[in-house]
Length: 583
Image 1 (cartoon, rainbow, N blue to C red):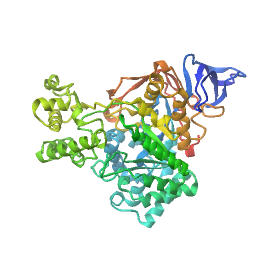
Image 2: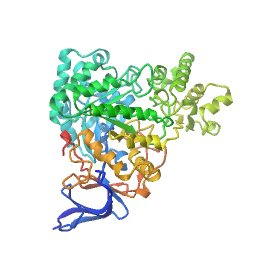
Image 3: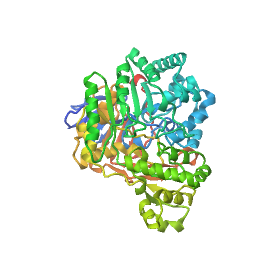
Image 4: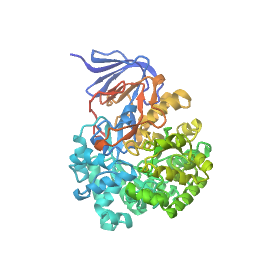
């Protein structure tokens, strides 16, 4: 009988600890790493030849929205295609528990606009197995569901507030003292059951990610004291962490409150994952000032970690689904409702005037900020007009600005008119910036407190493919530019992420640790197709999403079992719910 289950032989081990890489073997037994290097005392049932490959810890993605998708896609693709072996759910305060039975439909609608998850996919893919109300029941259900990745779960604060206060009250007023105490009790109950903390999106009344009806999400207007009450729970328990998404753009109507973050860290006395470290492609002082702020906070004993968005991906969208201009009240109103209602508003001259004015102001003041996600609208390129082939030759491949200049119209009128010609299905491609490798990597080389990621995996899947960030991070920042060492990259992608988020024993390759392992050829790493991906119809309800597959990953193992071999799913679901980070 073999002494080991798997022997990974002849690879270059990068163990996640920053120890210099070395050639060595790894042996796995019962889902854990039994031996690293040296000579084994027996044989293995299976030998994986890792010659010419890197052997490293599986990647940890701290910012995903696979809360619904994991119910029909246990592997949480596309992230798992790209080497992610552990994810955190419930980010930004959004999720599906606690949830009263009569609120299930509205709970799903909440995710339709803010995270752009198709409603019919949730109805067909998640609703049939919805067997929970409370957080303990939800965690039991998640533990029993098949999983191809490991999972940590936040308390989704918006769900908690709605459950205790009711939706209208949660959106319109602070909690009362009894309501606040009940939310504390439920967070304690959830932490007892295995939650890792709580999460919040706080973007103000003109949130970039609004509710399905255009109103702010519950936590967008949540007052400080209600948040501090939840932080007190973590402090009293001395466990858990907080994920916070807050405005990072220079919007005078919605400035980022750094002092609030410091107060929150002081009250909680627990780690905060701050999304995101802002990066300018031209001005290095933008990210450097944030890194200096993180340094000052850490020196004061406040454990705040900055997370950066690293992936170079384009935005492709059509106005039938687009919501990421929601920080503009005019655009938020025009893109809310049914397709027919949207089209009627986009034909209204007064609405058009407002859209022109607000878009011009956003493009002038903030360029590539919340007012212009995906790049300045004037530079958007007409990508596809499937239902009007007679117009394709005339407009496809041209920017809105070019068309507007040639026809003597405003570029927003061009955008709206071409969209109306196709019932809002005309697809536009964001130009995207010219990325500065120095500034992007500076977020990680200039601070010990920063973590890559913010993939938004599972969300906005018709628009972009952030789940491919791991492959881009390694191929661009390590291989192509040499700005990061392989050792530093794997430390940030696995070990530091695990430390900040409370994963126990994961993120490194050491004896006794769970065997979450990626084996890849660095020279062959690539995203396929590049830039914006391709549309595939693989979601429940006949819905589609935009995907980018991964090349170069030979073997991906979760808890010692192979989930992907040369890009093909094995069908194995060895993932675990990591209650309290353990499992």
